[in-house]
Length: 188
Image (tube, rainbow, N blue to C red):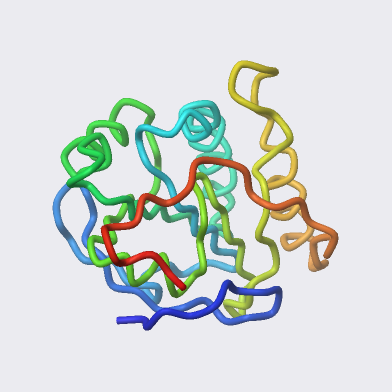
């Protein structure tokens, strides 16, 4: 399992993981996600920012995965004892209700969240064919209670990679609720 690391920067390799799916407990690894582009997005159920973008994220994943060149995976890492809405059974319900067309995994130890240096939900990491970080930023500029989400920033990164180009290196940071670390487990 990955060890704690500082946040990933553009060009860093994707940290490996092997985590259980919230729906059936099947283990999914980084190597199982075979595509030219990989989106790893940290999610949860209770965060208003996730709730705001989850339908748009499901639609984007459906659209881009149809190309056969993009894979998505969701990872939840919040302390499920303190936030029961973020426990695997509740996340499985969220996946069914929203229709996430990708594996939704649970990081009970929070080691994967630390290895990626994730700070919030939603927090998308987009990797190229060599599994090097090409984009880490917001899904779009919208906020809960405002305009409907478009996924514009995430779409721009995916479109650039699919066209054989690099996403713009000037990237807005992700926006959302902080990761809910288990007591004594927050990164330094």
